[in-house]
Image 1 (tube, rainbow, N blue to C red):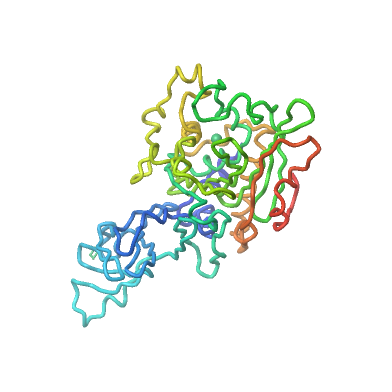
Image 2 (cartoon, protein in one colour):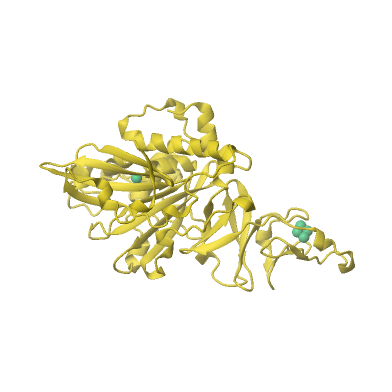
Amino acid sequence: MLAHDDNERATRVGPGTPMGTTMRRYWMPALLAWELPEPDCPPVRVKLLGEELVAFRDSRGKIGLLEEHCPHRRVSLFFGRNEDCGLRCVYHGWKFDVDGRCVDMMNEPEELSFADKIRTTAYPTVEAGGVVWAYLGPEDRRPPLPKFAWTQAPPTHRHVSKVIQECNWLQGLEGGIDTSHVPILHRVLSADSARPGFKPGDPFVRGKAPILELDVTDYGYRYAGLRPLDGESVHVRAYHLILPFHQIRPGRTGAGDYTGVAGHIWVPMDDETTMVYNWEYSTTEPLTEEDRLERRLGNGPFDVDQTTFRSRRNRENNYLLDRRVQRTESFTGIDGVNVQDRAVQESMGSIVDRSREHLGPADRAVIQARRLLLQAIKTVEAGGTPPGVEPTYYTLRPAEAVVPRDTDWRTLLAPEAPRSEVLQQV
Ligand code: FES
Ligand SMILES: [Fe+2]
């Protein structure tokens, strides 16, 4: 459980809040790069940490991320004209460049030079891995670029999508680092079902309840769920949490092989709405068109409206839950692994009351994540640098394998893991 005050500190992200101030120390996804496909294309609304923003790609291809509302009389620049290296408000023609400078005014005489005195809020951006990242923090604390390994993979081998989740970001994150729910919530009941999920014969499902082992690192932590199988073997699934909201987990190819790398990023739009970024990359073959449809997860273009990024299966329609399917084919009767996640996590309420929980040993990774987030807030309040800012996370890899029981799961993460320092074993 978490006391009311700590729950407030850990979850709320608006300007001036403890977690909002902490999150503003990291690069964070603002939108997908393809949403701004070419110079002078239409601008896009962006909501990030409770701030209403507008993104545009100027005539030279540079991306601007400005406060949405024009500093003149607060009209939305979403309606603006993206022309000649700036975004022009359609109400009185004030025009802003990617740095937020007002470069022209159509309703004031030029000789007044009033435009020189006007600036709007503009945040720095960088493109990496098909994502436009933004930094909303103090300029003198801007961290190294967000070069996660997946962002450095060639476009043929990586994929990223996004979908809105209708609850606080921490509920999503806590689901993403909660290995114990995975072979339960996402279970398929019969071996011959075509529904997405983990089948009865999968070692992940056959294994007994997991033992969790966790190492705190300088970026967050790495942890493994160890599920004993019959005989002398154990199923291992090892993840990373990179503060404040990145998960790296083993991905599975269509054949069920353990070769992919995948992850989610739970980026708060505001306190009660989250944009979840879903990425994967292959270290071997290029991804196929079928991979990019993300049917198994329910995050692709068949499942998520690609203009609003709202899921077609959502709270209003009970995620198209089918009770017949729930009896005979899948644990939930809901299709799509991440649709199942959104269903249970949104059902907890906009911001779950963590003072009313009953946590057990299987929640160890969740408990540790909260502890690290609250510590990160304290570090920032004391003038320090929170974990996950330095580039030690650049090369992290997850692992999944069935191995002899005496195998140390940490060796499965090599050779990348030794780059980052282990601070504490929990
Ligand atoms: S409100 Fe934007 S120019 Fe007047
Ligand atoms: Fe899940």
